[in-house]
Image 1 (cartoon, rainbow, N blue to C red):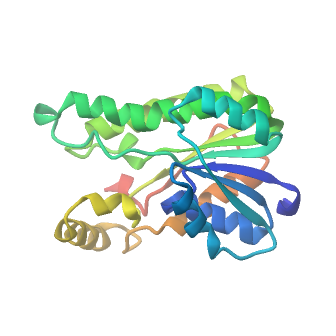
Image 2: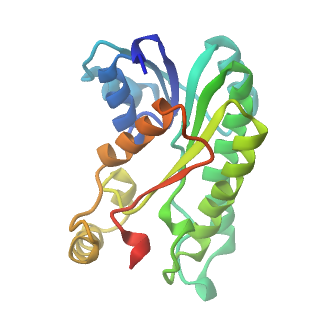
Image 3: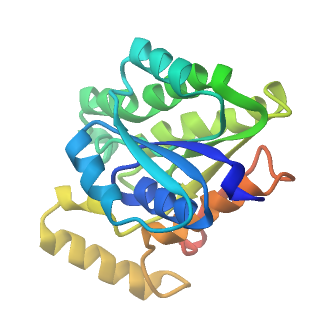
Length: 241
């Protein structure tokens, strides 16, 4: 793919996996629009990016459908839409799980991704790509992850149907495992350190993931025109344990 002729919108592009993908695509030559809630955070995140491509940031509340419709009406046409929006709630033992928090988890990830995907369809090139970011919690059976699995499984179960329904638009997803991003900063430092150490000791690859690992998988799905209806498990082998 000649990325210099491609325009990509990345929702959730100010940090973590989204920012790593923006950086990777910009280095490849793409014209990227990174979306986040905070314009100042976006500007700072994008300031150090280098490459033949160009990345611009735009603040947008992706829970606001009217704002999404206005944005895509103005920014289109585009070649690729990447959805890296996520939340932080929904984990814990089911017998103790706050279902109100689980509902907020759905509202922070599932609905914004679906609203953005639907709003972006009129702007997307008919044979471009639509790519979701889910999580490996949808594909493992670890205690304490039933709620997270429900959130990400809700998105994953739609990928195949959407790939057929929206063809020739290609619809795919990447399902990450434990990735060292700011998402983990909500936990005490000792908890994060212990978890990452345990993961490094038990995962087949011997380390936790980095945002760049997932960005690599996302770029592959966007540029490989023979890939649709696929979910790539970028988890270091966590699903095998």
